[in-house]
Length: 96
Image (cartoon, rainbow, N blue to C red; front, side):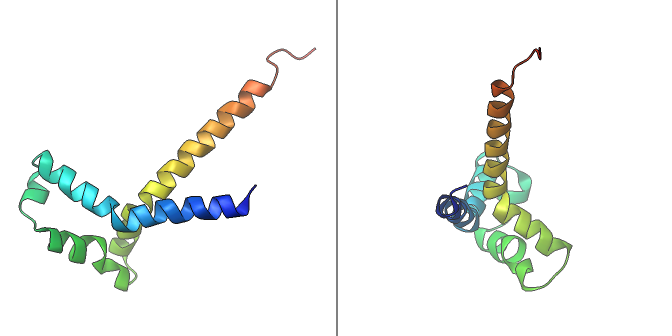
């Protein structure tokens, strides 16, 4: 395992998760006209739902961290599935 490669990978997707991802969620919600997002300004979404609960430990802070780390966790899952599929292809199907 190349540690520097993994650190850059984590930095990329955690940065996307903490900066761009909440905006993507908000604007997709506005585009498909979800009532939750159409009645809420962007500032309320950012301060009260995404970043606000991080100041205390509660169930809401866990939800915020899940939103923010979703891109990293999602792509780590995809990488793991790809690695598992490559490992199963290398094994012979019939053992002699």
